[in-house]
Image (cartoon, rainbow, N blue to C red; front, side):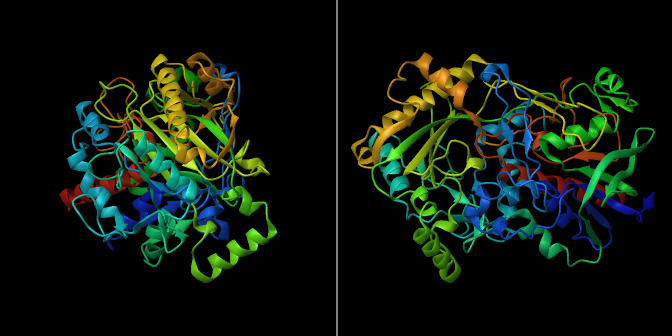
Length: 537
């Protein structure tokens, strides 16, 4: 077995959070940081071309390509869960939408007993992370590593969607990350000059020039090492060779909502009966590890377009592809700069709600499954999903082998509120689609089709055809209740020298895409650790 030199901090996972942690901690030249990543370098060119997310959606070279267990609540289907396995993690393969969530999300985290996590506490870290190309204001920063840009407004279907929603009484909102989230408008994206700005690009690449930061790729972490109740290092396989490394200060787990609970359980941290059943020695019983799983489940409306103005038309045309390629190569503009969804609306399905509970997004393309390619005809898609699901799932180990994926059990749509909200969201989408401005672009509704009208039929459609929008969280949640895994400083309850810093610590899923709040969490955690170092000095 090989032994690496000691480090002050070992960061496990070079994803949205891990790249931030490694970059921020290594700003102190007096500490040595090692970052372990199971995947490789982000050298695949499709990572950096925004539309390339489609190329890597099911690319096992940069993607764990997970699949859930068969879920009885959605017709016994298994759902594909892509997760990044590359520098930048899921920020290198996602749809690049930058949504922070609602003020109420973070105030709720604080109300659950997590001091330091209210919206007012978190906003400075959102701003510190961000280089907002539209400029600085009360809600945005311009000095951060993460470039955030407005979507180019050159897609006629998205523009018609925004105008139709306004005509239906939904207020226009030009900044979902500003004062309020309500309304319809265009997304902001993690792009810079027509290229993806992942956390590997924004944070890690500049930091890798520092002599006190070492990044080890192709390093599959197998277990965290302990001396009693203190984390002391990590055992991992580097290019297949068993290797260990010691941490003189802390191990920081940034594996995400699937891999963080998996590694904790492989290391003997989790529900004692589950670990014992698999022959894993129990280091510390912690019932909540892998529990409280939340995810955003969406249902689609897919349309055949009357006019050849969709991405389908470009991708299915040799001339269109050549034109798009030249436009991108020469000017960094055009179809290849497109993310997953140019525009969206955040709505309240019940008037008594304090904030939006459903998001509806439009994409100027359509497919049966993204990994199967786009439809051969002109098409576009709307999806609706509930922002704050009540359904809860879990992550469990299938085996004690670190190379085996864990069991992902989402339990989608098991809560009645989730069922009502997704149906209400789909019906709201249809009201917008009925506007004359949208009808100009619609030939017919491909899915669910005109025969599906009642709420019961819509719910059946959602169960049969819906899927994830790739936002799993909360499997190592922060809090003080019996199912909490970390405290408000993100230290694992009952242990020392070990923190979890990623989307798994969210007490409840943020109301929107999860990349931005995950980056904020890491920025906040870096300050917590720096404060600890200052006190120890």
